[in-house]
Structures are given as structure tokens and as C-alpha cells.
Image 1 (tube, helix red, strand yellow):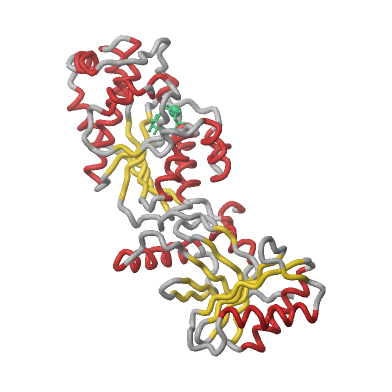
Image 2 (cartoon, helix red, strand yellow):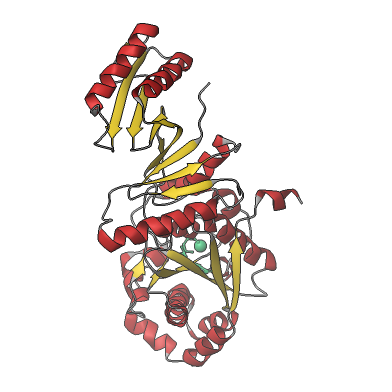
Length: 395
Ligand code: ATP
Ligand code: MG
């Protein structure tokens, strides 16, 4: 049997130099511990290029599934920790080779401790010789069935035979805060995931229009936020009562401009809320050409109301690619639940696809939206959501 007792976590070189690198590692370390908070018996250790987790009797599969969700990890492996001694290394590698049931293998050794008497090449040769003598396995350096990795450090050596791909990106939260407009649709939760992957801390704003939109629709958005919050720990959702502003828009603007004005209002509100809560950019799930409000002309007209950077991680994605990601991150099934959101309720028949800024400003001049915006911002309801823990699911 292979006795995995340590998880070895690698992070990419990336642009992690100097102080940035220290911050990166510290944040990653904290995020990993938070992700694995249900496992109190784990012990952690970090060095300049690795994080090690010592296992006791945890299920490696469960740990692996959690670690795959931590941004900033480039790969990780379950390893056996043994003394840095060539006989121990040979014995362990041979045991792994014997139980593997594979036909070909390759040794990959990294000697981190240069005072170890054998260099990587000699270690590879000695271990391979031991395996060739005692098993039927053959060496294949190009496409081996089994790659045995040996990492020699000054006291301990780590041996592993599989390398699991991590989520990549930057540790969530390291690059500042963004305010994401979160609807109950498919796209915006995926946008949240993409932003988090860039190391951003995502707060969400949701525009609800009660009583035209139901409590269920709001709950659906909070559920989506909770699901995607797993990737950064927890998430603040600012719920905005959008009803009054929407009604005013419909009263003063013709049907074709309603969506344009509504979205300009959303951007104004998002800017206001960003400033209030210290977010340095607005995020959305928009994708060029997807619907009338996402033509380049529309984006231009809508974007004109704010000077803040607007991050649109899905801007060039096809819907099928977005759906694939939504399935992967586990939000798709919730997104397709049939609860109406504010846009579908006031859905106009003929939305303009090439809106003009001048016309938009003309309609907006007919009512005092500034006062309404201020009221709405003063009355925001903020909910802090977190993924449902497995124990709670059983309650
Ligand atoms: P999604 O699937 O994310 O709802 P969509 O394809 O339905 O996107 P739109 O409804 O035009 O497209 O919305 C574009 C973007 O505007 C959304 O991705 C989201 O960022 C934002 N948005 C739309 N409606 C709301 C809402 N009610 N509250 C907060 N943000 C919203
Ligand atoms: Mg939508």
C-alpha cells in the first residue's frame, strides 16, 4: 500500500516576486486553511515554494476535492514523507512501482538540498535500477504509465506518483475588491468565479423589484452567491430595491429605451455602492452580442454613466462555454430555476439595439433619479452568505 501522509502544494512562479510573493503565499496559506476548516487534525507548514499539509486519517479524496477549489494552487500531490536517505528512497519507490500495476515508468527527481550526496541524475539512476531489477516495469521517459516524483529536502524527502492540477489563478482576495452585478441568470455567477480567480474579492449587488419579483427570486440569487462564495470563503450581497426606479423609467421612457435606461441606472447604482464599500471596479456577466443590451452600441451607451473600470470576464465567451463553466462550478442547476428577475418582468417587446446617449439623457431628464438613487443606496440590505456546509445539509 502507498501510505500518503502529506499533501504537497505547489504554486506557480507567476509574477510572485519580493513582497508580492510573501503576500501571495500568506494569503494562499490562509485560504487553504479556511477551505479545510472542517478538518481540525491537519497540520500545516509553509516554505518559500511549497505548502505542506500533514494528514492524519482524513479521506484524501475529500481533501483533494476541496483543494481543487483554492485559487493560486498550480498543482498538488499526495506524498509519502520519508527520511532523506537513498535506501529509504529506493525502498519506497520500489513499493510504489510494485503496487502500481503499470508497465512503464519514469523517475523525476528534484534535489532541493544541494548538500545531499547524490545529484538528481544519480538518484534517478539508482532508483530506476532498483525498480528494473525487482519488477517487470520498463523505463519510458516520454509517455510513462507511472511517473514517480522524488523531492529531496534537507531532512525529509517527499515521494509521489501523481500530480493533481490545481485551480490556478491568484489567491482569492489578494488583488482588491470588485462589486459584481449578480442576477439570477447563468452568466453572472460564472463571472464571479472568473473574478475570484484573478485574486479579486467579489462583493455582489443584486437589483430586486418587489413585489414584481418574488422572495424566491431573491433567495435564488443568495443561493447562487453562496455556491460561488466557496471559492473565496464568503460573500457580501447588497440587495437593492429597484422597484421605484424601474417604475419611473417605464413611466417616462418609451418601451424601446426601457432596458437601456434600466441598465444605465444599474451602473449608476453600482458606482455609488462601490464607492460606499471600497470596491475599485464594477463587474458584470455581459458578453458582446448576447442580447439587445449587449451590442457594442448598447455597452457604449450604458457604460457612459460611469468612470469606474467595468470588468466583464465573459465578454468574448460563447454561451455554451459559459454553460460549461457554470456546470463545472456547480451553479447551473440553480441558475435555470424558473424565478423571474427584474429584467424579465419589465421585458419590453422591441428593445433598441443601437441606443443613443443623447436620447437616453433626454428621457432621464424627465424625472429626478438622483434623489431616488440616494434613497435606494441608503436602504440597502446587506447579506453575508457562505456555502452550506455538509453537516448543515443533513440537518
Ligand atoms: P445573466 O445570466 O448573468 O443574468 P444575461 O445574459 O441574462 O446575464 P442580462 O440580463 O442582460 O444578461 O444582464 C447582463 C448583466 O447585467 C448580468 O450578467 C449581470 O451582471 C447584470 N444584471 C442583470 N440583471 C441584474 C439584476 N437584477 N441584478 C444585478 N445584476 C444584474
Ligand atoms: Mg439576466
